[in-house]
Image (cartoon, rainbow, N blue to C red):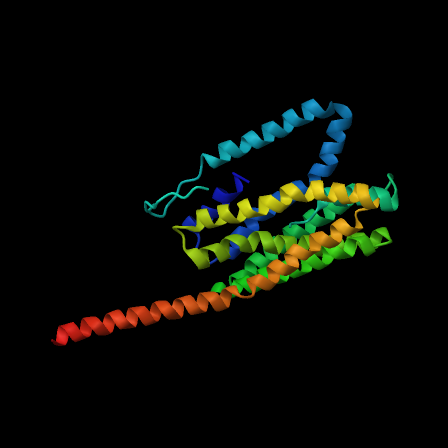
Length: 276
């Protein structure tokens, strides 16, 4: 995630009018690897083994370092005091597919479906976000959270492989919405000066369920002999988060209204002193 935050923040230095579309195009690149990596990794593991596969992945990550050297901030950097400092569950899906449909099921197809529709979603919703005014972009994020939560809960209900593919396609589409809308919303709420801290804080919070989720899912699997409850529980946080996000436009409107009142009072006081 260390490379992800600056790659989103830097876009706000170069683009303003079409920030949503630009975020969609940039983040769509990662979906290409989501499509191809499952097949590539399977082939590498069979041919060269785990150690050499990890070395190849390290070389690919090194390319990100070279790409990061091209970042050049254009906005002025203001000094400020420092402060100490559930996405799609693909791996649980793979184990669930093996148990539900057998080891011969084409598990890589599911990741490919998520990657394809995620890339499409990033391009579509990135463009749509440019036509949504201000903090109302949050409602696009709400829709993505609600759909991802519902699709997570529907995974255990799919008894045919085609139904699971349909769920993954829809989940990937709104996962793309979630990814590409993140930065434009942050720019709207906190401005360009604080957007890096805002996105970093968001990704930091995301790391908590992503870290504790797999062990909890494994524990439930050992206790209940399936992943059904794990998927049901995984769908709850996005639904709750979507409901909470609905309050952000209201809170932001009240904050701006208070700022306007304060500015008007200050202006009235200046005018009174000027008359005196």
